[in-house]
Amino acid sequence: MASQINKIGRRKTSTARVYIKTGTGVITINNRTLEEYFPLAAQQNVVNLPFVLTETEGKYDAKISVRGGGYSGQAGAIQLGIARALDELLEGMHSVLKADSLFTRDDRMVERKKYGQPKARKRYQFSKR
Image 1 (tube, one colour):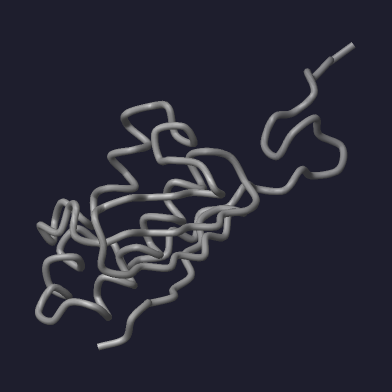
Image 2 (image 1 turned 30 degrees about the vertical axis):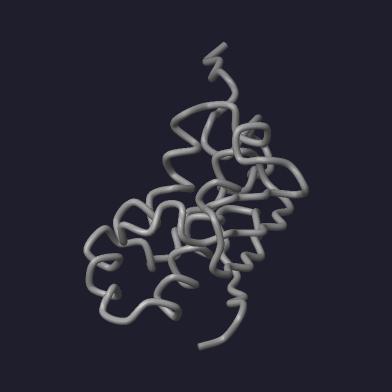
């Protein structure tokens, strides 16, 4: 068994590098605690979901470095990275994590702005006269 597992998770324009090792359940994101970095409980739940599903809360320390995007994309990227790391670390948990589709990289991205329009799909007001 490796002393530390290193995996990458991505969502929207965010990229998270996740390092997991056995410990006391301390999650550090960009040298800040989970509660400091994600003050909203919903985002904390997104990050903790892989630990909750595998019933390993408090058993592993996670050191995470995340860049790009906003808080929602970063939380999703971290979740994917943690799920991939736990899959490699734990035997027989692949089906539990896959049942909640935690291995699926959410490929939805922001649609680009088109010329002659104010936004991606919004049009300027049509004037007949």
